[in-house]
Amino acid sequence: MIVKSLTENNSWQKLDWTWQGHKIRYTVAGQGQPLLLIHGFGASIGHWKKNIPVLASAGYQVFALDLLGFGGSDKAPLDYTLELWQEQIKDFWSAHINQPTVFIGNSIGALISLMLITNHPEITAGGVLINCAGGLNHRPGDLNPILGAVMGTFTKLINSPRTGKFIFNNIRRKSQIRRTLYQVYCDRAAVTDELVEMLYQPSCDVGAQKVFASVLTAPAGKSPAELLPNLQHPLLVVWGEKDPWTPVTGAKIYQDLANTNPDVQFQVIPNTGHCPHDENPKAVNQKILNWLSVLSVLN
Image (cartoon, rainbow, N blue to C red; front, top):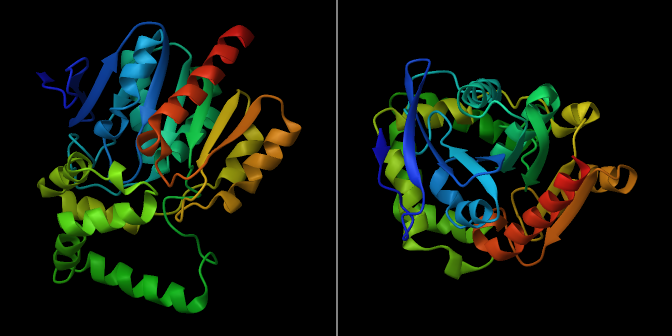
């Protein structure tokens, strides 16, 4: 089934694919070497609207999909984990691409990309990590005892039938979404009504509150430090300099790797936050295209 795109020039379409009985929203644009874009927590295909047309017009076949539980995909009543989404994307690759692919992700989407690149090198040509998350959630020992106790209480509240819906309804208010975006975007002008709406609308879907609770209480999954030793393909790591959620100071593992491994590049985008691909797409698109041009020579 094809539904109308959100892009102003309608140059790409949104499509649906059924995976394990669940509707998955995806898009594809362009022709050439395949790229697969994976969004972060709470986002969707629309978060790549400033990137898809540019990458597609540069001679690449660009796929993007909504992770199960987000965007236009079903809000299935499941236990959500990084491994579930990895399985979803690998099956999508088998069904729609089936040739070595460059995985490009932001935040949690970047961590899933790293999982695919290192766990399934046979389907991969390389990867681009944009402000990569360290885990789906905090790991035991990541937080000090007081903050850990607070998060433990929050976990109980968000899972409670009585308080979970109340918390979710407050977090998903458009005014609250905008405030959160102002925290993680340096350029407030990039926080548009369209961006807020893109994040808000899926939260109105049946099952969205249970997805939210499941994701916030899911296991953290493997860390980048556990995954990177298995890296076999070229990697571009892009980081918004002023990201408060995954600070550039915490990206030392990638910087150190770039200093010792010629197949790894680390690039900082000045004066941008957690989502530089949307906040400063011109800079990010150019870095990706420059890296892809070198990658094609190597391959």
